[in-house]
Amino acid sequence: MSEDIVYSQKGPPALPEMTGPELEERLKESRVLLLPFGATEAHGAHLPLGTDTYEARENCRRAALRLDERGCPVVIGPEIPFGTSSFHMGFVGTISLSATTFIALTKEICLSLYASGFRHFAFVHGHDGNLPGMMVAAQEVVDATDDAEVMVLNWLAPLSAVYHHIQTSKRMEGHGGEGETSRILVTHPGLVKLERSVRHHVDPEKMRKVQGPEHVKTGGGIFYATRRYREHTPYGHIGDPALASASTGERGYDVVAEWISRVVARDYFGQDVDMDAPLL
Picture 1 (cartoon, rainbow, N blue to C red):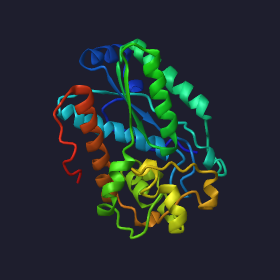
Picture 2: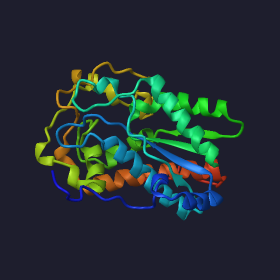
Picture 3: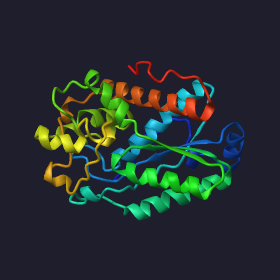
């Protein structure tokens, strides 16, 4: 153990990093909240268990900066570090909430923030396993209030559409692979252990149901429920992390932040946004 700095966090400050008076002033400018949903689960021997939480926070941070440039101020909400990760329970360190608990937690967080004055919520995931619960929770928050608006932003779909222009791998990369490792190299390089990485790809037919183009989470029309991730990988990740680079991570984050900022600017600020403009 040591007292060395593990990592630092770039601004703007999120809600937990503000004082009460600072938040009150911010609420005078905006009642829009970006809420980052993470997870605590295995991502191989090379990435930290909090990878999804770090990604969700960064997605919100970068989107908030772009929205500010568009004249659309928002607040970044508290990171939710636990999700529905049942299929990762075969790996040490995974913390999984039941769908019922996850939905109730999300609803109560939003209703608390609603009481503070927030009216427009954008749910941003870092773990796609949370998406079904996020959608149910979004509806429950709307049902429980008179004027709250809630949307769930699945950035994996637009990123997947252009990912072949970003990654260097010629095979399908997945959880903890080149792309995700690249993004953590950008934000938390000291937590990435590339020397421990292992190349592990999955048979294309099996991968089709994990993260293929037909899967809802990557823009398709079919939801494939996962039983045990260990059936696909003994390492906790899929792909070749050794191919990762900070430049690849930057490009990935740029696509995600631009897409999120376009949606929020259009739907919560009424801006005329060209959603079909290239993201790269």
